[in-house]
Amino acid sequence: MWEILEGIRRVIELFGNPVVLETTFRSIYVSGTATLLSALLGIPLGVLIGFKDFTGKHFVKAIFNALLGIPTVALGLILYLVFSHSGFLGFLDLLYTPMVIMFGQAILITPIMISLVVHAVESVDPDVRDLARTLGASETEASIAVLRESTAGVALAFVSCFNRAIAELGVAIAVGGNIRGLTRVLTTTIALEVMRGEIEYSIAMAVMLLLIVFVVTLAINLIQRRGP
Image (cartoon, rainbow, N blue to C red; front, side, top):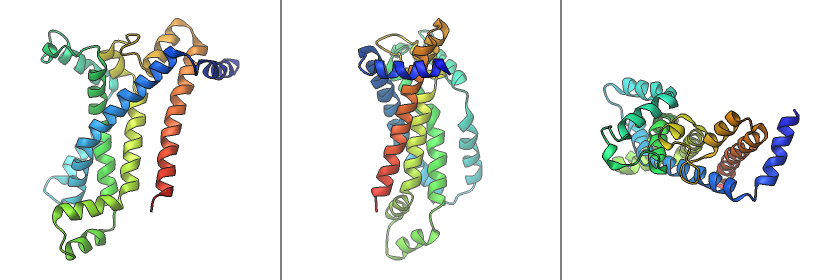
């Protein structure tokens, strides 16, 4: 109990620490970019799968649902083998850079994005789609109408993916290398400080991570409440 209280005290002390702020902002930047990349693919694909009826739809949904639980350590290992100097994409020289962490996190959370968007779209009243078509809307316009009605579900998908990305460890440490000033993020810092025995400092970083997740989730909820 004392260690937790000491960790909270350290958080207050570390708010102005340049290294802590740098690590925090890097975590937000890397995971935020990964979430945006995931959304660029996941939202259109999720709307398409949820909107269309086609042969094998349940099988496609089952595949994405199965990918929700992919181990981050396994994904990190695969990416390491691909981007290492002897790997297929080693010539890109991206290993141990923030970019490859973004790429890995985007791969990790895209199935989550797709599955949640599919669920959000399928939860919309079918009359919305039918009404849009009756009024002469094209398939694209009808899809946009359905997407508007599922805004809350899409926002939940976005927040869930960001929270998953910023909290993961396997990818960040496997392909990022936890290099100070370059690829070190909150989760890898926590793991490092625990191994060093700096429990109070690791608790401080954990509280910082929880604060980010809480603030992002709260902000989305407030935006939804103030929406139409």
